[in-house]
Image 1 (tube, helix red, strand yellow):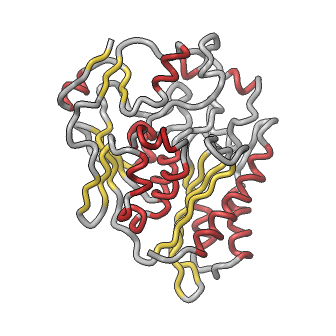
Image 2 (cartoon, rainbow, N blue to C red):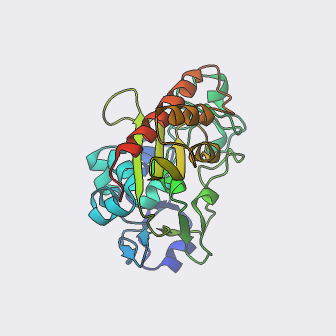
Amino acid sequence: MIEFPKTLDEAAAARGEIRAGGTDLQELRRSGVSRGLIVDLRDLGGLDNIEWDGAAKIGALVKVSTIAEDRRMQSSYPGLAQAAGDLATPQIRAVGTVGGNLLQRNRCWYFRHPATSCYKKGGSSCPARAGNHLYSVAFDLGPCVAPHPSTLGMALLAYEAHIEVHGRQPRPVADLYDGSDPHHDHQLGEGEVLTGVALLPPVEGERAAYFRATSRAYSEWPLVECVARLVMEEGEIRFARVAVGGVANVPLRLAGVEEALVAQPAGIETFEQAADVAAEGANPLPMTGYKVRLLRGTVFETLNRASETDPR
């Protein structure tokens, strides 16, 4: 059964699984992992636009492809636009939404197998921890070891964005995620409907890059991914924001890396030292030690690419 609410109040009052673009939900339904009522947001107006007033406010139903292809987004928030342009496939980007990407379910094969039980399906254990966890976390921060899947969540951390939820006060995008809670991929409760994302004003002189390490060139989930933002003056880094994904059960902003970059000369030696800082605190599982090496390389490559781009 599907409901099509016409207002946000109706959507908040409905008691079912919310569908936006539906690219991932349809697969979960097909496999039998998702069941019950669907609350489809297709008829809600006003959530599929990008508004500008010194900064961007992105509606939750804005397509991922719009973020990637919009020229003002590319010039104002280049790291976010690049991340949107590289995730998934062109077909998924054309249908998938910003809100759907932020709130999607993890990719763990135990979670997605209808015959297994895990924390995310109401169980009391994480079968990946004792099983095949080749693609799991390198920072073991909680009972569930599935990496968080949201590329846009990671990129929006680097842009210090806030989420907007119907009937609630805006809060940092980091508040969507809690690695200590193994039962949920995000922290929106029943009756809470994500309506948009608010960004800070663009930073003058920003250089940014997105880079992902994958096991194949196209249409693959990242093993490690990174967004880096830099402002450089006379060869010195004056501003830095770095976030990574694929290595923990939440997207991570790397404050230590940012501190290691600011007031340092922009160059290979500084980026290598910052990449080493990125791996501090990693405690990989028996099968995920390779992700620590990938993390260093991914952070280094992203910083190097960002430093070589034209400033906005």
